[in-house]
Image 1 (cartoon, rainbow, N blue to C red):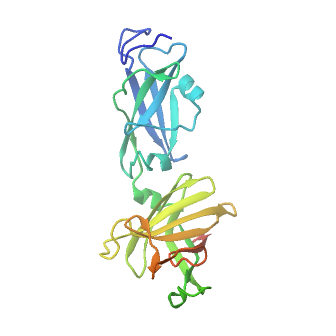
Image 2: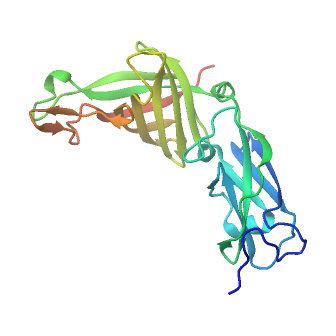
Image 3: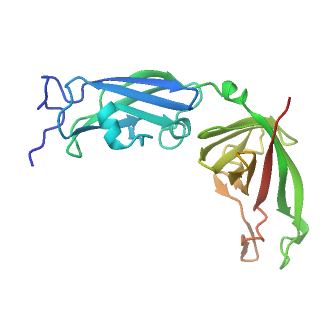
Length: 262
């Protein structure tokens, strides 16, 4: 089958095949970035489009047929802020388009386009709620016993927001000031608790929480892991690693319930 060279034109208009008008906007209601575009060549049979953020192809809420037909791509905020796109609060989000013919990418990426600005963290925190609950941890005096003792401790996040696709929050405890950042996918929720301005808690050191929502989004239960430098901590002693289920000092259960404060 004949294919076009990159950026050559076998099109309606005699301009390069990577010529698009690209627009982005942030929709606060759905917490999504909406990307729309115009093909300045006009669309042909068997022609489609891929959408890119930060030079990485992005999966849209719409299927490929709808993207090709409507020239529209909706991307959840959690995706935009996740790897490999890595946008953050307050960032300008611009997109690029690649021309696709018969399933093959046939143009370099278009020029960046769009004016969407992600909300500042403070705006998200305004929607946060108080969450209270507990977590279990092995009594340090029983770590090396065959059946270690698990102790339940209270826990509280004064300001945590679980949105359509993101998790955000902040607070203070006896260690210092921390922020919560993560993602939601349906009932699955994961977020990281990172301290700031605490010498003993450098970046990548904190707690990773992963759990499931239930009770119409009012309860979150799962496991937490203690991290150091981006890696889960483990106890090793006398050639033995103590990380089996139920005997791991740095992994245990937690549960949280949302509290409405008037």
